[in-house]
Image (cartoon, rainbow, N blue to C red):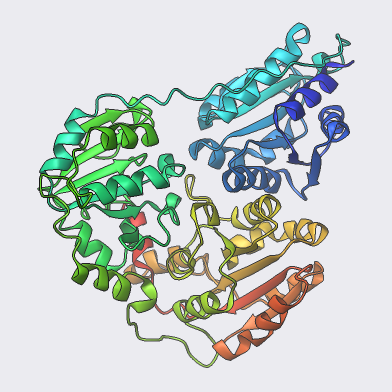
Length: 546
C-alpha cells in the first residue's frame, strides 16, 4: 500500500466523511484513497473556494473539515481561506502536497507558511504515515487548523497496509480552574451580563442554567449568534450589531463575564460598550487569551462548560433558584417585556431610504426574514452590507450562523455557504454577500449548481465597495476606484445555471415565495439593488481599528 493510500484510509477511519478541493497530480492519490474508503469528494472551481467550503463545513457540522489541494499554487490559491480558518480556530486538516527540493518550481516553505497564519504544521513520514495522519486529525479535532505536508516522494513509498486500530480523539481536559473569585463576583453582582463568544458555542445549557441561578442577562459575540435563541433574557449580539436596548443594558451592567470571548473591539465597540465601573471577568481554556484586547479584573482558566458547571455546584441557591446573595434583581417582568418588545432589530423604527430603483437593505432583510423558513443557515460575507443580514435575519441556533470575519476578507461568503449547505442539507442555506464579494467568488456558482443543494444567494448590490465609499467619501476623496456601473448580476447567475432575480422593491420578492415552495434544486440568486445613501455604523467602528 502506498503512503498516500494509508493517509486517506486513516483520515476516513478517524471520521473524515467529506473532502473539499481541486485535484492535481500531487493530491490525486490521497484524494482517491479517501473516496475509495467512503468519503465524498466535493470538487470546487478554485482552491480558495474549496478552503472556505471546508472551513464552513467544519463550523456548521461541528466536525473536522478536510481540504485537499495540489502542491505549490494549489496551496497558495487556498491561502486566504486557510488563514480565515486558522484565525477562527476551525478544526480542519489541509492536505498539502510538498515539493521538498528547494529548486523545484513547486517549492514552498510550508512550515513557515503555516506558522505565518497561525496554523499547526504536521508532516507525514514514510515509516510513520498512519501515526502522522492520525495525529494531524486528532490535533484538528481538538480545535486547530492543521497543515499536513505530504512530501511527493514519500506519498509514493510502499509501506505496510494499515487496518487500524483508530486511537480515540482525546478530549481536552474539562478543567474548571479556580472558580472562587468568579463565584464571589457573581454573588456580589446586582446587574450581571454574560457575553459568550466562539469558545462557548458548545456551552448553551450550562450557561443558561448559571444565568438563571444568578439573574444574568445573556449576550453573544457575532461569532456565537444564535447560541441563546429562544431564551427570554437573550439580548443577542453585543458590540456593533447590538440593538439600542442591548447596548443600554450592557452599559448598565456591574459585572460582565466573557465566556470564551476575548472581548475584541467589535464586541465592545472599542471598549465603549462596557461601563468603566463594571467588574470584567474572562473565562477561557487558553490563558494566552486573557487580556489580549482589553484589561480584565479576574480570569478563570478552564473549559467554559466545566467552569459554569463548577460554579453551579458551588453556588448556594434559595427556593426560587436565584442566589441567596440577592442578585438577579434586574430580571423583572417589566424588563422581560422590554426585551420581548424591543430586543430585536425588527422592532427598532427607521426611515426607509429606498427609492424607485433601489430597496433599503433593512427593508429587504426584514422582508426576507418573513419569507424564509425558520430552519435556515445564514452565512455572511464581509463588507459594508454585513450588518443587515446579521441583525435582521433570525437563526434557529448557533449552528445556523456562519460569520467569516476573523481575517475580514471580502469574497469568502459564497463558498462558505456551499460548505454549510453540505453540512446541513436539511436547512435552507442563505448566503448574504455584497456585489464586490459576489463578483470575486461567482465562479463557485458552478459548484452550487453541481451540488443541487437548497441555496439562496442574496447580493446586497450597491455598485461599489461600499465600506470605502462611506469611509473616504465624506472627506472629499475621489471614489472612481471603488464605484462601478450597474451590472446585471442576476443574468450572470443565470449563465451559471442558477435562477436569477433582480429586486428593487419588496414587491419584486414574489418569485422567492414560489422558489421556496418548489424543489429548490437550482440555486436562486437575488441581485438586490440596495440604496447606498448612508454608511453603516459598524463599518465606521471597524475602520477605527485600521
